[in-house]
Length: 365
Length: 86
Image (cartoon, rainbow over all chains, first blue to last red; front, top):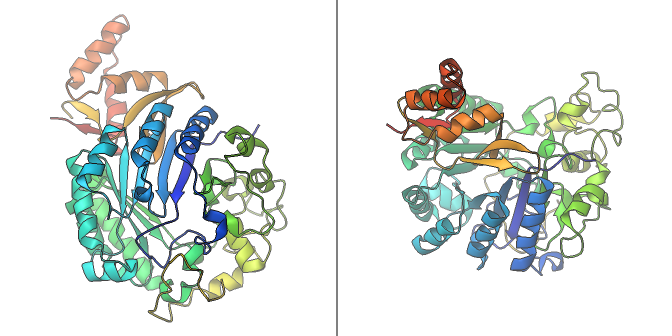
């Protein structure tokens, strides 16, 4: 028996008013594959099946989940299924009327992204005038007594504003701040030269986070995720492949992680065709890299015995840097490809972004 | 800590799939043993710590549970999961 999942990440739509250059969505979001989005009843059935499998946490994300006209119904479906629901939104469509309806439908938690604590910078990175709307959305979420998380994806062009970001989070009354250093999947790949920070930037930011935690205490939980590229040992991507979480794409494909569609030859079962229990337990995509049997050297005889700790790291990163999705994640210092990760630590060479749009970028991925 | 209550958005549930008590918080799950769940059920922002200890003591034939309750509430407050309603 595979372990029971605890999290379902529901990518409700890949449409989004923002154009963030590090978006984790696939580059072909505008393609034929994602044209047909799931119907309301598909999602609600998926939520019910997820709860029966053991899922407790539901992330309603995208793209922009608020573009789904049935979002209120979906929240009610999540509540009735017994899931704890989080709305992961850019905040620009979080109007009073909709926010009140979401509250009444049982939405549990709101997470709002901020691209920078500086208005002009936020709008430049998002490729959309959105800063003021985000602040208004955060205020509204607190007024309606939603627990509020602010998230900010960090990179070379906003890391030096971390102190302002921490203060803004405090002013907004957020309970949590997710500081996610950019991981190089999706749109971040063609933007690597504009996003890669320097080690000095990361060290200054980490120190600022430490001082903030000391000063503010448990009132605001700050999550700081160090970027893979500056580490020597990999992280357990998604808590291990097919171990704790599953991602449902807008078209109903069920994936072990948000970037799994980049792995060639991996077939994803769809919630329109199969029960979630079968997809989780039996389908090829989930079985492929589950556990440790699939591992090659150096993972197979890991000198640190970390097989069940990091599960070989990230499959998508292994594929991109070595050409083999079953290789050891090159973030690992024992990987023969680790030098490529070290070489990629060169700080950003350009300020120009390739913005996320529904059109696939013309640069190599 | 005067009148403990769960932080905004935290929900106490019984997970009938795993057959255990859990505290659901934004993007997280805290697994609880039955006695911790029993204490948290009483952390409603109305009862004082003395009330909570008293209620549990009455339930368990006068057992002195003060230290256990204080320890649990302090640990959860340290994690930001229990706050003072006073």
